[in-house]
Length: 198
Image 1 (cartoon, rainbow, N blue to C red):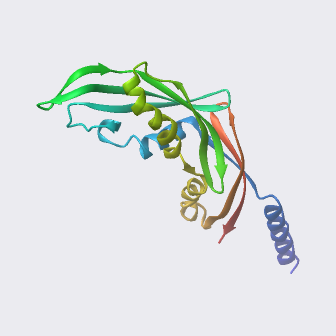
Image 2: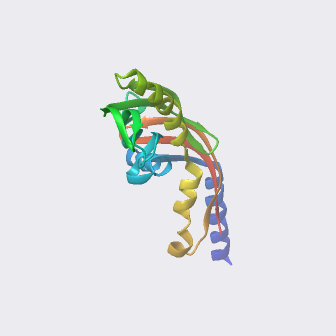
Image 3: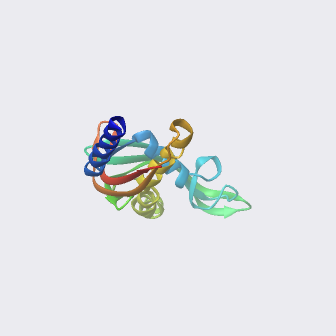
């Protein structure tokens, strides 16, 4: 009987500690953010995102090879842009070819379960006015809205294999993001969450 009471007391103490300490810190690496951007936006032919035209058209504008880095507490997305601008004639483009490198920086932001981005700034863009007309909305709107990361989904996927490895089913019931900051090579998310063990 004494052993049963000790197990019950230990379990009660453990559960009390877990319920009192429901703060969670989630680190998302720069590489994970870059992978998310490539999967969500640069998923066209050859990893390209076409702003105008297609692989079959003579004239086109596309972006590729996004690189994510962190600078001064912001996320910087650098990408290569390729354009053939002019007039299509018999399937070819009569005009000029451009290949500038463009950059947009974003501030990390969180709402509910989702890590998002705000305050998009164009840091570097083409010197060509016509190309800027196409790049500006893409860089300042499409990139930040396409980089949303559902932090709760990431945790739930990580916990999916818990039954096979431990014999217990661990699930995330709730996650609420409170703050986000960049530390070294990670985006650090402070949140509250609830876990269930069955």
